[in-house]
Every structure is written in C-alpha cells, then in structure tokens.
Length: 606
Image (cartoon, rainbow, N blue to C red; front, side, top):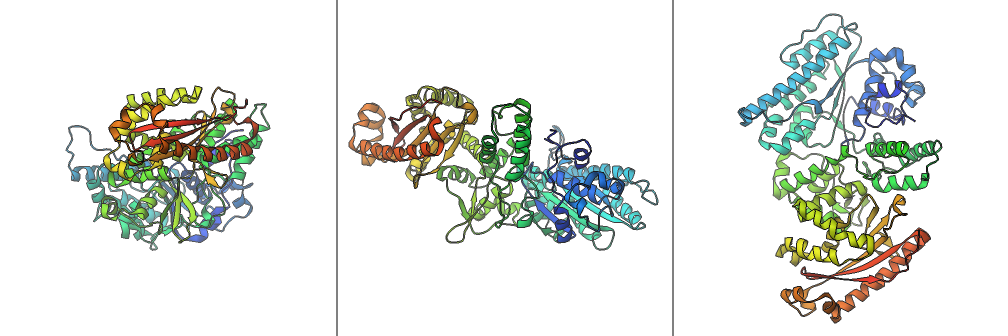
C-alpha cells in the first residue's frame, strides 16, 4: 500500500496510485459557504492537500481529467456546477523568506520592512510567471510581468475578464512568514501589517478586486487569526469557517478511517502486532482534536498518523519516537509564549493540575499588541493562543458553562513536558544526570538515586514563591518530566481508577512488555515543614530512615499506600494478568527532602 506521508499534491497522489482518504465530499459544503473563506488548523494538518484538491477540482485545465481525478470520489459522483470553471492562482506564503538581512547589512526596522516587502513582490512575480506560462493557451493576449506584483495581477485580471472564466485565489499558510517575523522582531511585524505596510496592502488589493474585477473566489488557510486581525480592514470580508462543526473533519483522520487502514496493512503481513493494539497506540498519541464545540468525533493528526502507519508497514513495529520531527517545531510556540506572556506558569499549570483550562470563549480577533500587553493576557487569551497552534483543543463545557481546553494527546503533552524540563534543568549535563538517576528505578525498582537528584538539582531551582504556593502537584510535575519515556511507556497523568484519580501511571507499551522494565504507579504527597516540627536545615541533614519514623510522615505514606492499593487493583482488572506493577508513595517534606515507600505488589510475568 502506497501511503502518502509527506505528500500534499492531490494530483500526484491520485495519479501515482497513493492511498487517498476521500475529503471531496466537503467541496460542495465549502462552495456553498461563501466566496471568501478563512480556514485555520495547526501545522501539518492537511491544509495544503485540501487546497491542492480545490485547485484540481476548479481549475479549467483539468476538465479533461475530471473522471481520472474525481470519478470514484464523492464529488465525482455528485459534482457541483462550478467544477473546472476557474483560472486558479495558488500562493504559498511559507515560501516568503522572513529572515533578517545578512550580517553587515543595515538592520533598522525600515530596511527590513522594505526587504520583506521586496520578498513578497518577488515571490508573487515568480508565482505569476508560472501562472501565465501554465495558462498561456487560455489567455487571449500576453501579460507583462511588472516590478510591482500587484500591477502584474491587475494585468492578469484584465486579460481574464476577456474570457468566460474568473479567478479563484488559494492562499496557503497566509500567516507563516508573518508569524516568524512576529516572534523575532515585533517592530518590523507591526510595520508589515499596520498602516500601509506591504502585507496589509496586499490584502487590501485582494479585497478590492473581489468587487467585480475578476477575482470571484478566495480560500485562505493559516494557523491563527492573529495576523488576519492585525491586517483588519485589509481583508475583513473573509468568512471564518474554522470553528464550524460540519467542517471539523475536513482535515485530519477519524478513528474509523485509521482502523480501516490498519486492517489493510495487517492483512498483508505476518507481524505480531494487532489492529486493536495499534489503533489504541494511535489513539492515545495522535487523537483528541476537536475544532468545533459540537463536533461529533475527535480527529487524529494526519501527519503523525501517516508517520506511524508508514513505519509500521515498513518495519513491522511501532515507531520508537512517537513524535515525528516534522511536528517538533511546535515546541517553539511554547517558548514564544513564555517570552511574551506569563506563559511559563501557564505551561507548567497545564501539566501540574491535569485539569482542563476554563475560558470564557475562544478569541477570534486578537493582535500582536494584545500579546505584548501583559495586563490583557488572561486565561482566555492564553488558551486561545494555544488552541490555534494545536497545543490545546476543545474539551466540552464546565458546570458554569466555561469552555474547557485540554492537551489533545500524548504527543502534545510531550511538548509541554520537554518545555518544562528546560525550565527545571536548563543545562544539558543536568538532563544527562537525570537520565542516569532514573535508570535504577526503571530497571531494578531502586528509587533513592532519583530522590537524591530531585533534592540536590531540582528543588534548589524552586524560588521561595514557588515553595509557598506549591503542593504535591508540583512534585508530581517534576516526576512527570523526569520519567517521561515514550520509547517504553505510555504515561497517564490523573487516570480515573476506582472512583478516584491516580497521580501518575506509566504503562509499558505493547512492544516493551518483553523487556525487564515494569509498569509504574505513583501517589504523591507533601507535608509542610511545620507539620513535622523540623526546620529545613534539620530535614536536609536527617537520614531518610529517620524521617520515615516521624508520625506525620508515616501517616501520610499510609494514606498514600491505601490509595495505591485501590488503584493497583483497578489497573489489574483493566489490563489483566500481563500487568507487572511496581507502586510508590512519594512524600515531599517542604521542598527540601523526599522520602518514598514501595508498596509490595506481586510482579507477574508477561
């Protein structure tokens, strides 16, 4: 089976025999929705493939290949009246270079704005030269390519108006280069999108020529509405369709679609994996995106799903690293959020609490000035920003009707964990020491080296403010970050077990069950130093055996043991005899020492 991993060209996909999960049934809905549409999705979510699908369907040049491209698809069986009725101009703004000028060149704002403006015109003219060449037999007279790309576009429209057709403009990644400029140089970004900056002026031109001058339809994709908000009147007639329930699955895969692909791969191999097992792996790592509040089903990230399926088909095993490098760049959005807002605390809290973030609404219009204004950066702003970049997704409503947002899956949680680990352990050598400290716990059930590491390396990074406001959830967050191991484990934070929520559970992946590793279960507690009647200096000097004898410590660990026994029984009931479980109660004494107690559980062989 030819899986189209990394392929966003609909024409090539269809003519070269690749698998295609039909999305053409959405063509009619999109066509009827309006003439100027804005559709947002996170990176690598299939937006480019959708635009290429529209291009092939509406392009007058493909009329003779309609049956070949669409005959067996939904829109081929039920075509719309506008099939192949347009000249199609496709633009990809990710191809515009946002980088600052080379070393030695004037770096003031005006020079960079001018340079990026020239980049925009150069890119447009390259695209227009290709357009004129591609349509040369359909254009009744030649078109002159002028230095100003908008003048060239005016000339193209003048010629198109002499034909029975009009222009359909497709803009992919409209905010790509502008987001890069925003993150690195807010002053330059401001000049690009405000007043009569070159970016805003381009969209004002688009708006103007949609008023009966030959540009009839526009479909724009991007990641967030921030740039569109900043160009404001530049393109205020585009209808936002990205939160509509009937377009929720326009890009991405459903669970049923992936199960069908898994069944077909399995039918051609003798490898030991099962469809149910592989589907569950994909669900916890890649599923969970809801782009509309009333969507009936969650959506899987398509790039990650094809990465997994391609590896599974080629190697007969699951990928060791579940995060494809194509998606790793999304961590930069967390880094940026930490710079421009009170984002560091927000990132930590999302993992620390394990609870959804409640906001009043999703912001559809917010600008760079909002992002830079700390006084306006409330939960609604932060949650909306992370939603648009795929770091949070819709998760229902609270009892007081707040909109709830949660990390969609384990891939996204890993991005949070990696970012928090950089907060806690900024030096690479510290992360190496952390890996060495957790080894004995994973292989031999010896937790003391990890406790020592947290005490000596992590706790000292907590400020007094952290210590005053933190609880056992902060301790849990530290262990989540230090123990994350996607190669061998599926990490579950706050899984519901026996009418309660276990603090942390690490379950072996199916392909790691024949290793020497065990499943791990943790319950975390914290006692302020005042409750044990010792100072921080006294606690740091005491032996762990001595601390374990303290009545308050014994009581707290006993309470944790009781909870662990309930959760361990529930895990056994859920996962069967193959579970090999070690359980730990971990108690923090202030943020000075850690003690732990291992719950005796029978280790059953796989």
